[in-house]
Amino acid sequence: MQITRRLEFDAGHRIPDHQSQCRHLHGHRYAIEITLSGEIIAISGAPANGMVMDFSEIKSLARRHLVDAWDHAFLVYRGDVAVVDFLATLSGHKTVLLDAVPTAENLAACAFATLDAVYRDNYGNHLRLERLRLYETPNCWADAQRSDLNRN
Image 1 (cartoon, one colour):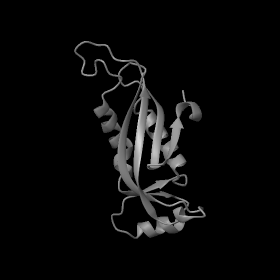
Image 2 (cartoon, helix red, strand yellow):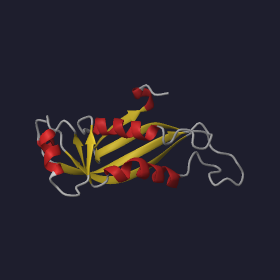
Image 3 (cartoon, one colour):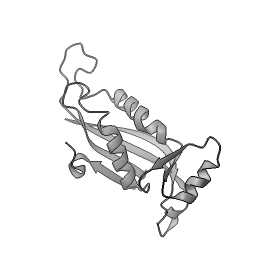
Image 4 (tube, helix red, strand yellow):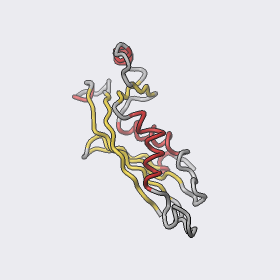
């Protein structure tokens, strides 16, 4: 069985080598969809009876391990030195340094890697992260899938 939980957050970024508008500092209302697979829990009296995982727990874990860090932050490639240096001059600015250019594809892969262990078999029902879909806009998204990332 697969289940999916969607969360939204706001963040800024730029794609330094882009040949169009995305090379400028700008922001998005991102959405992230977390798809988990697992067996339906069948333990009478258990809070998650009849579920793969409680949707509120999916949200809580995603917020704690990823979304709260990225929400209202500037997601910047650490090699984008001019922007990194500029953001450092803003006292108290929320900046997340990344090892890759913050494209939708790289952000989805990074988010998948961050959350993969978080959801692994939490209930003894073979729970695991299968897909993480990151929407940069309502019409543009990237999928990081277990099958594409060669993860067990």
